[in-house]
Every structure is written in C-alpha cells, then in structure tokens.
Image (cartoon, rainbow, N blue to C red; front, side, top):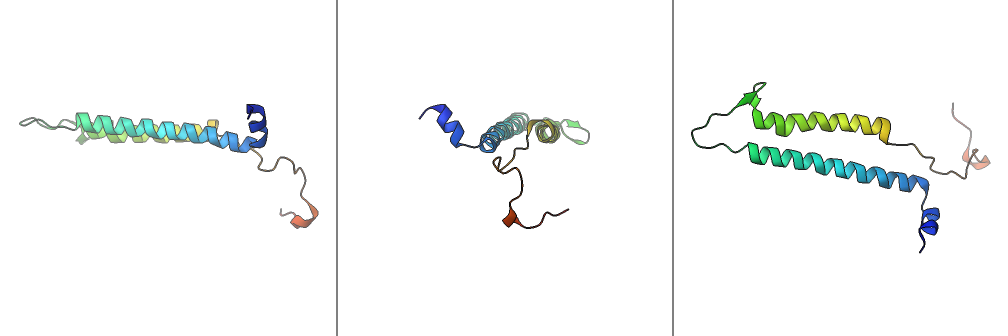
Length: 105
C-alpha cells in the first residue's frame, strides 16, 4: 500500500501521538540506562574503601538517581511545553451539530 494512501487513512492526530510516543519511550530508555549503568558500575564498593559522599548521600546515588531524576523532570517539562502539539480530534466538524446539545460556557 502506498504511503500516501496509508497517511490519508491514518489521522493527523494519530500520527502526531505516534511520534510523541516514540520520543517519550526513547527518553525513558535513555534515563533508565543512565540510572542502571551509573548505579551498577559506580555503586560497587571494594573491600576496605570508604563510601564517597556528595550532599550527604553516596556519590553514586547522586549521579545515578538524583541527577537523572532532575534531568527527566526537566525533559518532561520541556517536551510537554514545546514538543507536544494539540491536534483536533475531528477535523471534519467545524461547528457543533444540532444533536450535540447546547453549548456550555
């Protein structure tokens, strides 16, 4: 099936939400990988070595949990503000129909 036919059959709203879903999943996997790698590699403690701290918590916990959490919150704010688009769900309907009831203020 040609791409044009497929794109006409799928609505613009569906295509937009599909793109947004891919971005969100990629970001989620990136932050998961960051947390897993940093906590897994830096969280190992060798015998006789003291735990290094940063802001009163283990250094690996700050860089493996707190920092990606702050970055994920920043990404979420940025993406929801600038990356997501509002699309009309029914572009064929420009005015409310007679059977839809009265308009609410």
